[in-house]
Length: 566
Image 1 (tube, helix red, strand yellow):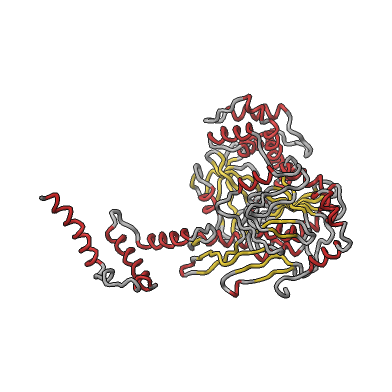
Image 2 (cartoon, rainbow, N blue to C red):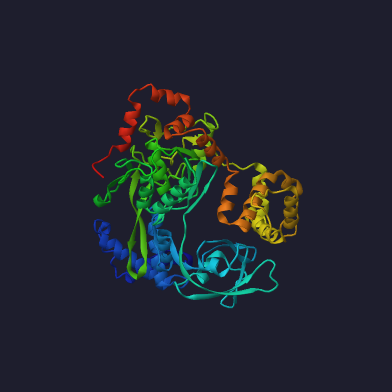
């Protein structure tokens, strides 16, 4: 009898408490009323109150509101719509403006210590004599042992004009070195450039921050002064940035009025068509644009527009597929909401948004499998993808990111992946180990020549070093199998320690299949048209040349506008 009583009594009490706790308002609502916004807002507040007051563990009500906000945004299924707290606003502004108050160093945790991986030119760090390879062992008298990158950044950044005292451990120095450095405004250069050979310039763009157009323009003009007659524009690992800078950089390579991108939104004032507002700055310059699976957003705007207008050869692997536009809204308390408000479309009208059900690896595998040849374009997977055409009549597809004209995977071997896995188990990467070796090696060899090469003896010394690293066990046979990759990282990091970041970047890229194929294509041509014909093969060149009006139609298409004047 007692058990039967408990079974009926407990639910009854639960219902009674619910009704009393809510003032009976839940039970008084009709079906229609429960669909109203007012009802749902009241429902939310009631759930919030009950959790705050009755949950088994005490919860901070303010934290619960943040959980609710994050939960609502998560339910959108859109990874680009996020709440940005006042605490994180500085990082947002840095990504937009590219400037902050700091020292001018690039850092990474190596072992237990934050280590200087590079010095930014014309900054307090350079003026005070900090060096690549320096270990930050203390800040303001506090030990920095065990700090991660985030904690180090929080301690080192600060308002412009304020001092920070740091203690440095340096290879070859018997005692730690003390520095007091006054923070200054640091402008993060998003462009690296160099001459690949006597006629081809190389520009790597890391992101589309506020000054991207001017930095890219200045870099190309400097390369032209050095003799550049063709250009590689590298957008690998470029996550995008400001929409207006994506348009502004693209404008450098297209004639006035050529379509660049169109945004479409359910909010009327977010519907825009962007065209090139200026005359083409680098007219007639043959270009290869390198992309990979991490090229996104504004990178895809640039690559998509140049592909649609047949202005450049796109080379690499399919891009990320982020065809959406985010707007940042200011909220009370210094908080912000970054919200997807529109989608964007290339000049041919295609959206490149990737389906969440179709991953990057799938698209890359399909593209490589269907590749016509290593250097002659591809037949991409077209199932379910809408067909569009470039100005010159080439077929391109919507969805799945930008599919390059020439697929060149930057692959690693099975042995190289196994080596990275083994090294990773010890808490390191090959880059970190090569950097550690390079700091000691350049200290022991201060007269290293700029045209140095990695010798077998240097590689053996490197192996001896990693065998002495605690917790790291690397089989010598495996090490020998990955000798070429080891040499690539050693060469780059020794160049970094001895000659600076640009020389490191140049050395590292020289071994990239994407870089090598870009240089090969550009070496053989004198115009954008010749480059496209070479990259796409004779069949496409014959198709376009068969039409006597092809050249004039192409030029007209590049300068035509869409949806009105720009």
